[in-house]
Amino acid sequence: MNAGGGGGPPPPRLTAAQRHALRLVRANRHSAAARALVPLPVAARTPAVWDKALRLFPPDAPGLATQATVEAAFPAGLASAAAFGRRSALPSVLPREAVDATIRRAPRGSAPGLSGLRIQHILAVGGEGQGDVAAVVRLLTGEAAVRRVPPLAAHALAGANLLILCKPGRVDADGLPRLRPIGMPAVLRKLAAATLAGAVRSDAAALLSPLQQGVGVGNSCKRVLHELTAVLACRPTAALLQLDFKNAFCLVSLPATAAYLSHAFPLLRSYLASVHQGPDAPRVYGWAPGDAAGGEEGGRAPAPLPRVWLQAARGAQQGDPLGPLIHAAAMQLALLRLAAAYPSAVIRGLHDDVVVVAEPSELPAVPRSASAAGAAVDAKLAPAKCIGWSPAGAPAPAGWRAR
Image (cartoon, rainbow, N blue to C red; front, side):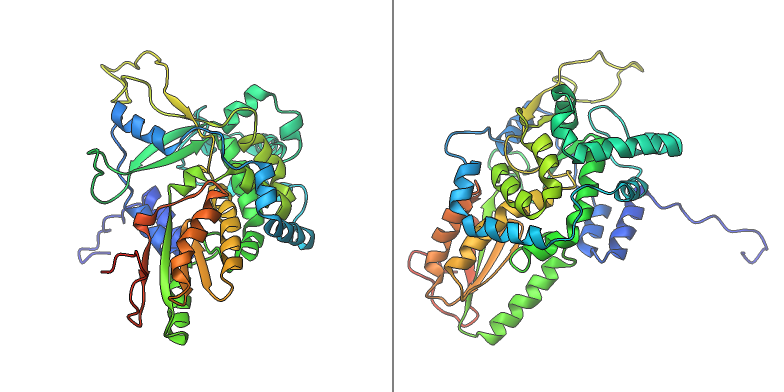
């Protein structure tokens, strides 16, 4: 009440972004909450931007990893995943209650997929209709997705709209901003993936830790920083090497991911086979040529135009709820090989950002080992983005540029 006795203005209503940020804060994900409040700008719909986006999704090619090469290269890693799977208490079939919980928690303002169906439409059909939706979601996560879903329907469910965002920072040498492609899959696929991701989250963190901290670990950056600070304090002669893999999210091997996750989590096998390992790679659709405005002109909807699209034959899609796990699983095989090669080193990864703490005498060989391990899962090391640091002031290894 104000001094005059009248009611004050009502408080402003929270926006969808603010509500999402508050949920992230309650989950102790402060960095993600900050990013939710300051979204990245959308890239211009131009042929040059589309051509650059195409380079982020290179086609399948001879010499890439296959199921056979992965099994030959990582027998110990796959055996450990299989042993973990035998110990796991995860159900072999997704429970109905888990799907219902995912539908209730699904964000109302999320972007639609190719069909335009949104979570609001599903919630509007009522209890019996939602039960039918839950049955379809469970079908998409089980063996029936491989045996009973027609190829055309599977192809539609695997597709996604492509949102191309501009990364912060300066533009590249081509005069264009650095791009971050975000896939917006069909809502049924998103519900299926979100339910599976929630079901395996805790077990995935246990499987990947301590090497990989990018899945199921709260405040992972802070945890890694504190751990490595403590390690360097206890090992004053050690040095730190930060490794970076080029565009690994879009490039890592899907056969490597499927092999590792199928051994550890049989619950995921059918979904990975139906969505990511079908006869055709998932399509990612951009805008219609010439429709730069993307809206109506003169009060009328423009005539339908053919849409540009590409096939995501490799890697994971940002925007897929299972994307982080798919990416981390492939990188985990590379981290396991690197850890086996350097048992005295401390190795931690946040997806494709990998930090190695070892004695300076060991560091010169680490990039070569990391490059070979990454290549076995189709991840390419970016030497120009790798950097080393010695708290004790040890000289840079021969051939390394000192600063």
